[in-house]
Structures are given as structure tokens and as C-alpha cells.
Image (cartoon, rainbow, N blue to C red; front, side):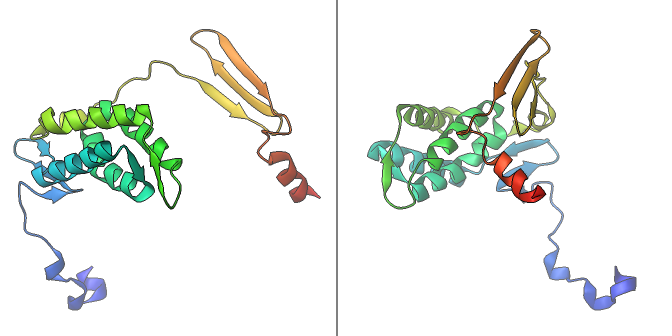
Length: 182
């Protein structure tokens, strides 16, 4: 890069010092012990946000997004937290842009689960090996959709599902296709 762009192309101020304990993605990494930790400040902030949302029993879209932003670190570090995180995210899609909505029973339960993890989860010095392990799927389904319908194959149980679109759920595929070809 120096040879092509010249001596002013490298900005030394942009480089950080080498460290065996860098902070990246909001997490504390330790390369010598091969562990990752969630900073205490982030745990406290997430815990406060979850607690206040549970106390009120309702939340605005902005508040739910803030809670999700704080809980993303837990979802990154704990594979079992991902489904709970995704279900809370689904609740957020139903919240109106202005105003607030009461938390559903499921959202309250998921928030309580996260609150317990934040309180007792031991979120310091988690081994990096948990990030590299991939879980084999329990079920493999093959799906294909066309302008006519949807087909799902389950080879393990030798079953299939076939659904034909009607006027209400064709998602406008046929109308768009006609516009393109006409």
C-alpha cells in the first residue's frame, strides 16, 4: 500500500496497540486464555432495561429495541438464548411506531429468563470453543415454492406437505409475473 499510494496513505493514529485483551464487538476478549466476557457495565445496563420494562408491563418500540440491543451480547454468548431473543424480536414487530403495547405473557416470561441469566449467568471468561461448535440439525426439511404453491419434503419420515396458493395468499406472484411477461 505504501509503494502504491505513498507515505501519507498510512495513518498511524488509526492503528491500535497490540493487546492480548482487546475489546471487539462490545465484548472483552482474552487471546491468551481464549475466553470472552461481557463487560459488567453492559450486564448492568441490560438488567436495568429488562427490569424497568417488566415493572411497567408495557413498552414502546424504541424501548423494546433498546432492550434487544442490550441483550444481543447474551444471545451471542449463549446459543440457548437465541430462540428467546428471536421471540422477543417478534414481539417488537407488532409494536406500533408511536405509543406502547402491553407485554404478552410469552414476552414477560422471556424477559424474566433473560433477567435470571443476567443475574446468575456467569458471563465472564466464557471459553471461545462455544463459538466454533455447530449443532447438527435434528430435522432437515427441503422446501420449494412456485407461482402455484409450496412443497415441503421431510425425507427422514418419508412425508411431504403440498399447499396450493389461493387468491388470498399468492403474495402477488402471479400478478407480478403477468406484468413482466405482458
